Structures are given as C-alpha cells and as structure tokens.
Image 1: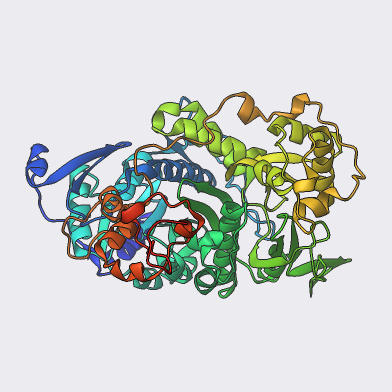
Image 2: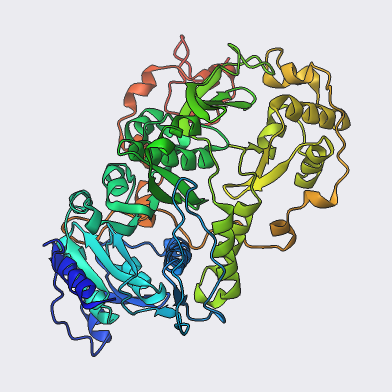
Length: 613
C-alpha cells in the first residue's frame, strides 16, 4: 500500500458517522467491582462482558450456539474474501492457516486476474485475531445490546478492519463501551448510538458499505431488511435471525404477510417454511435495488431461525428471481403438498426468456383424501445452503473443536445440512403419515428403505427430527403407507366414511413397497451419533423477556408462569357463583353427581326435593 492509498484510507476513516460514541475511561483493575454494583461478569468464547442484573440490556445464554456458528461462518467468509488478495488468516488452534479456497462468486462476474509475480516471491500476508487488517472486512452489528457478539468477532475472527457495535439504547451503548475496554478491543471495535435503520441508510454509498451485517433483533427483523440489503457490499454477507416463530410457523398468517410478504400456514414442515419465507423476503427487498441473494447456510434451531446470505448486484440475475419463488398447496386432510413456481426460465438458443409459470398443480380437492387445500407463500424454492461453503465451515470446526463450546452441535447440524436434498422443498414427518391412516408407524430406516427400493431419493432434515425429505410424489408416499397398513392392519370399521384414512386406504397400492432395511438407508450423521438435536439446555429456556426501556428488574418467565398458573381456576373461585344455583344440575338428574351440597348447580327437583327419585 503506497502513501496516497494510506492517506485516502485515513481520510475515509475520519469521515465515519457522527453517531460513534467515544468510550469513557473506566477502571477495570478489579472485576469484582462490577459485581458489587449489581452487575455480573459473563465469559463466552474469548470474550468477557459485564452484564447488569437488572433487565436493562437483553442477553440470552441459550443463543451461544447462534453466536458460535456466526463466528465460524464469518471466519470462513473472511478467509474466502482475503484469499483473493493474497492474505491468509491465522485462527488459533488451527494447525495450518492456509486452506484451499472455493470460489463462490457468481458466473456473471468477471474473474479477477492474478497478479504476476516478478522477482523474488513475497511471503503471504497473515491476518491474526485481535489485530486491525487494513485490507480486511468491515462488520456491523446493528442491534448489539451488550456488545458480546461484536467483542467476540474482534477476539475470534481474524482479518477484520473494523467492527461497529450499534444500539438505540443509551444504556446498551454505555455497557458496550465498558465491555470494549474490558476486553481491550478499542482499536478494533467502536460503539454507536443510533437507530439501526438510519445508520444503515447512511452507509448506502459505495465507500461506506459494510462487508458483513449482523441482524439479531428481539422478535422480527422485517423493519431492518430494506436498509440492510442496501448497506451491504456487493458479494457481502448478511446474517439474519428471526425469533417470531409463532408468526412464521402459521399461527398468524396475516401478520406474516404484513411483515415478510408471504402467507404462513400450519404444517408439519413449518420450520423449513419459515426459513424459506425469510429468504423470499430478503430476495424480494434486494430485487427493488437490482440486487439478489445467494444463501450460504440456513438453520432452524431451538426457538429461532438463522440465515446467512450473500447479496450481489446484477440486473440480469434479478430477472430470474420470480422463478426462484413458489407457492405451496397443502392438503388440510392428509398433509400432501405441491409446489408451484411463480415463473420459469426458458432457454432458446442464446436467448433467455422469463415467463409466468403454468398451474395450478392440484385440483379443487386433494386426490388422495378429497379434502381442501391451503395456499401458502410465496416462499424461496431454491436450495437453502451452499454445500461447498457449509463443508468448509464443517471442516474448520471439525479440525479445531476446542474453539467453540458448541462445536459438537455445530458439526451435527452442518452434517445434516450437507446431507439434505437441496433441490427438494419441504418434507413429510413419519408420525403424521401414520396418524393420517390411523396405523402404527414404521421405523425411520424401514420407511427410508422403502423409498430407496422404489428408486427415489430420500434424506433427513435438520429442521425436524423425524422428517422425510424425498423426491417421491405424494401418490408413492401413500402407496408405501398402504403397503405398511396391509402388514399392520387397522380396524377399518372404526374409520369414518369420509375421513382421510378411509379415503386413502380404500385405494389399492400400485407400488409394492419393500421394507427390508438397506445399508444406505442410515445417513452418516446418524451412524456417527452426532449431536443433531440437543436436549433442553436449561429449565424454562427459550426466548427471554424483552429488555425494559428504562431498566429495572423484570419478572422472569418462570415467575410469570407461576403467577398465571391456574389463573382461570383462581378467577372462577373468586367470582360470585351464587347465580349458578338457579340452574339444575344435569348430572344430578342422571343420578351420578357425587358433589352433594358442594355442587355449584341446583339439586332441587320440581317438587322441591333434593334427592333423586
């Protein structure tokens, strides 16, 4: 780097937004001082943060997996970005810092020519953790809260130029500054007091764009997406968390549409549908600015979903976005589903045309159980993961398991993500298939073997423990279940005439299924016993209470649960029930009320007697 470039870089740094808050001088000679002030010190990864016991700033320890996974993903993304500049990264614990780079750039981008080497070979530059890399990446944590994630980025991810930890709460920004100084990261991390949307809108200029933007809000990220897709650099990384799973999983489809532009429906594959809804929403917002997304990794875990996508610019690619979205027709009776793309791409010689898709793929009612369909979407219908990139992250975590506390779970989830059928949206669940026809359930290996014997592909899903993701049509799925029912008969006389079970079992199977277990029916992640689905990490785990604007201690969810436990019964006991004596007791009339005088209803007969005749 020559002196002019260095001077220009210093000038750009001096023009940072005025919202950056300079940290005050704080004495951290004794950590116990924080504890005495009603605060506690939390250690996660390489970072230590001071956290107030009062609910002034949000923190959820259960999301350590989220933060570990983010550090792992950003590390590999930095490795890819800096390798093109001839810079290697040094990750503590890795035996060999240099790894083979995988090109994840889009085909429409011109390949950068490698610089010619003249004279003696120069030693490759190496970027270490905790150090400023002038050619490194700029990271924004738009909703930083305590600043834990930003501090961890600085101390665990090499190759960073700067990290900006932003929050709209002054209490949070004060805490961020304390944590920056506590970890001695003031040279790499800066705190910002600003509305996240306004901050990102102020960084839309090409020279101000961020290379990585992390959005981890309390609840829905929908209000931040428009600004985020504009503030990230071309080919940059966008990391988004959604915790409003009740909305995205179908409990409030109309609310989901207002936030994400897609109708969610209650299905067994609701967690994967939530992933596809947020990807659709991101791509839709990016399309408004001639940009599009390429998912690297999409994960459903615990009570939230997390997606990592790259954002590119390209008008030609944006035209194909309609063909990447789809509606889903879901039968309310048997759970069969059909995917309908919004558009299609037609290749005629050297010309590419974009047309509307033809449909619908279903009739007025389900062909299997004659029930109605629900229409959900539109959703993202392309792959959820980039297998090459996921394999890179998995290899890095596997070769350095001591780096993260949740390494075992990361390896299990990523292994399942690699095994998933990337071109098949959604899945069936073994329990729901058996429940529909009122039969016992085949084992997972038996059902997978039956699909493989029939010539279909099949995989599990990281989003659901008993998921069956397959390219088999619903007719083949139900033929296999009919064959299973012949081996394990149900009492058909107990089935209602118009029930889904009766309609499905009234048809003879055209496919003769074999349930002999095949060796390839058991996936490697299952054979190796990887931690794919963890047990509850702690009592009353899950989304924590929202931080209060003015601080103050908020009742925990456990205390709220005890407070409201049996509230309906308590309210009924406190209310006046004397008016119920005006109504006769039905059980008393039938002669089987054993409450006697304690019954809230009248035991008097027409003659005034209180004893049944």
